[in-house]
Length: 86
Image (cartoon, rainbow, N blue to C red; front, side, top):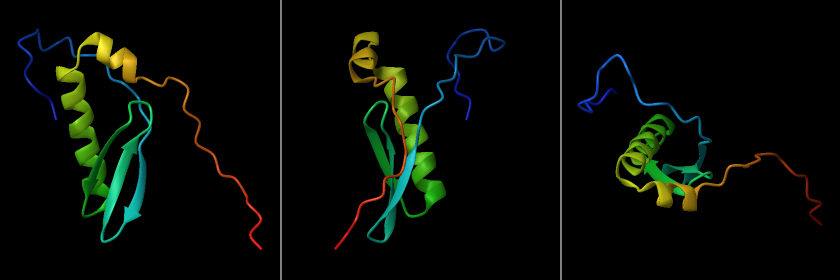
């Protein structure tokens, strides 16, 4: 979705590539962006993802540069671990 910013339309704001972790919770899905600790939810994976994008967009539109820097975790690693269960 492209929003009007009052700036020349040939110059779009830079995009941020962020991580989205989506998991089932009860009868819906929760989407988390660990870099900024922002989450959203939806009835489907697609809806949870779209709602997270909307929440992140609103955050970047309204947060001060200080708040963005304060919340940013630049090194996020997603991996799997194996745990022995007896």
